[in-house]
Image 1 (cartoon, one colour):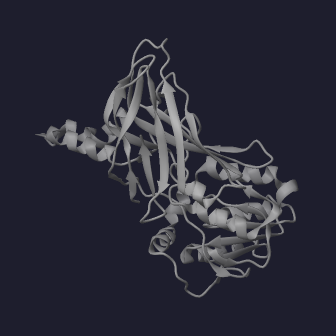
Image 2 (image 1 turned 60 degrees about the vertical axis):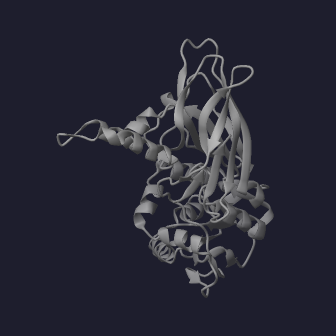
Image 3 (image 1 turned 120 degrees about the horizontal axis):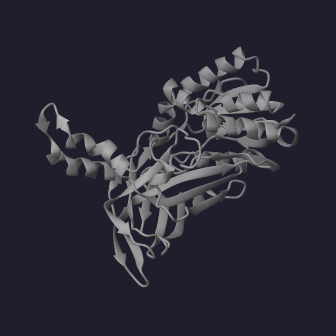
Amino acid sequence: LKLQTQMPKTATKGQPAKRAAAAKKGPKTPPQKRKRSSSSTDGAGTSKTSKASKVAKSDRDMFESYGRLDIHKVMIEDFPRTDAYRRAIVAGRAKHFKGKAVLDVGCGLGILSMLAARDGEARIVYAVEACKETAARAERIVAENGLSDRVHVIHGVMEQVKLPEKVDVVISEWMGYFLVHESMLESVLQARDRWLKPAGCMYPSRAQLFLCPGNFQKQLDEGAGFWRGDVYGFDFACLVEEAEAEVRAQPMASGTFTADQLTQGVAPVMVADLDLGTCTKAMVRNIRSAYSFVLPKRKKAAETVHGMALWFDVLFPASKVKLQTGPHHPPTHWGQTLALMDDPFDLEPGEDLSGTMRLKSNKDNHRFYDVSFS
């Protein structure tokens, strides 16, 4: 997945003892990520499909990528992810789900739809999926689990689907790397505006993005350290600098990042807090937030900073259930997104690393984001 990114390159001292991040432009490409988006069609029957309609190539390519079962396996076997939704549905059963109509945006293989029907006791679940192969599989799975009378799989693009009624709940697992990558949230917001009853609710109902500087030497070594060693008796060390530059050029979804790699003595900053009942597409397409991290003077040594780590939490209505993807919590398939600077620097005790983070939808492909720190 292509991504344009601007990252802090150097730190310059200001007044008083302040580091301001300078920025550089460059194309970045994080590893391919999961995420289906919603779909195109009519009606409520099981696995109905509309006539072919105009769908942007970027959207079509993403939908088709979710025809692979391995992507769905990664998502469903992610226990913190899937169980958070299950617990939220159980907690909201009496108030939000029992006897109600539910819309699942980007249902994948139908796991959330079936949980809403079985554990939430929903009257009907409209399970919308854009990928034809995945929608067909979901239909078979729903039938084999005896839920076809209450879970109706609809193949189509959410923006074009017509439902037979308004719904009480819109549920979706729409989150991408650093929360908004792949822009599935836009489909969820449109579903909310078109199909959610005035008193209806969103699952999840709130999403928060966090930022913290850190030491990413471990990930640099994972990506480039091979060239430092003995390569079948040959010396390839001349490639280390080039290999590290390739690693830095890519915001990475790291599954090996740990909490002790965060800059010690500073607290993560919340750089986005989205109320999913009221936020708009325009808000999601251009997220901007100031940040400031001050290393306490009591610290006896400087902290090396390689860049910024990003992760997110989502919260569910009327319950204490949270899905948390930060390094202090059980690992998820999202990991944390690491955005590396060209040149690491030492943050001294008493110094302030401050600037502005911006996530802006890419003008050529709204599924991608331009990420900048300045």
